[in-house]
Image (cartoon, rainbow, N blue to C red; front, side):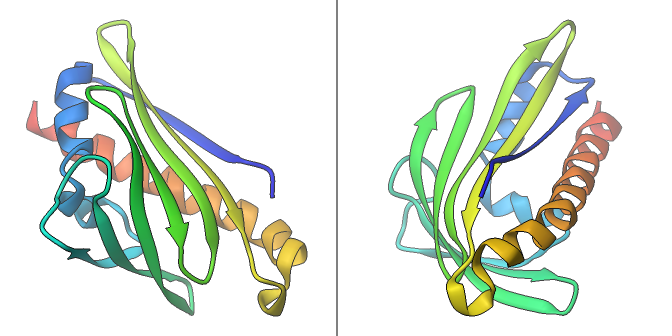
Amino acid sequence: MSPIVVSRRIECPPEVVWDHLADLEGHAEWMGDAERISFVGPARRGVGTAMIVRTRVGPFRTDDVLEVIGWEEGSSITVRHGGTVSGVGELRVDADGQGSKVTWTETLRFPWWLGGPVAAWFATPVLRRVWRRNLDGFAGILENKS
């Protein structure tokens, strides 16, 4: 599947945005598709942090098994998806004038029994909308705090 990329400008400095992105437990507050985040082990940030995210998109529910495989303090978090749908995702924050730009990139693979590439083709616009809405929610939380 081709990468799905969504981005959003946020009227907050990168340090503030990063502090909230780095709070992995807090992602369920602004990710409308994340019903629950459960950590596997004591780590709550950094490479090696493992989570099970109960995800819901429309009528579909799955437990997304995530492991943080990249952590660039102050700028990016990269995760590997190991559940039903596999792949790699990244959340990145960059300075953008007086504010920040958050970019969310996901490259996912659907199993053959879910329709493989055909399912991915249908899922791409839906997931793009979901993640764009998530970033809008994230921006709303941050911009309302400042």
